[in-house]
Image (cartoon, rainbow, N blue to C red):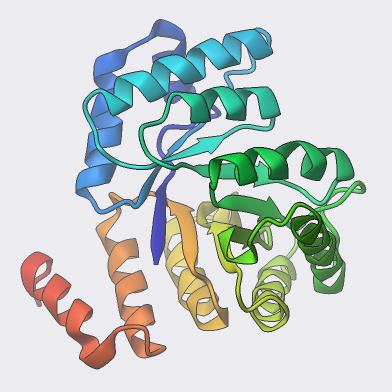
Length: 267
């Protein structure tokens, strides 16, 4: 499983404060903890909702430069603004993951060329000009449009991380099943691509959220999940992922499971 650390995201009030106050020590502490916990990418979202695109660019520069002065790990540049994405990439030391494009024409025409120019993998959200489709068939139609633009710009499909989008089941109990069906359909229709989810969305508004997250990630791995945006510091969640991947044949002879559990967990 490719793990994208979710903790540096300015939609969280405590991170918004870190970004606004330019608290380098707290920023680095969060980044380092995620690296030490095994994250493959460190997600960086600095959109505080205050100020302009220029302000977000300045914040992205500050975050990326300060993290990479001390930490040798690839980043996930997360923004809805192409200019912020371009700025974030320009300050990275390693090829970053870009989060994200949608199937909206303007998004595809702006973001895919940036990803191609930098040879960056790209998260592609299964939503179109009308928002998030209510059915898995609608989400696959969005994937097809994205694939068409990848072909147009000669962007390799193996660099696409399709996000089938998981909505809170607290507002619609069907959403978990729709996401799982979309995952399976993506793996069948676009086998060269990868899949990713923002895992914690599934449990929003529910009690015992981690129980829901763990159960859902087990199902999603079986359906073909390759990567997840999550909290890499949560040991119970990581153990669930390691176990599920072993059970679906992604861990030959359970070697990783045995190594990790022997080193980190007790009976």
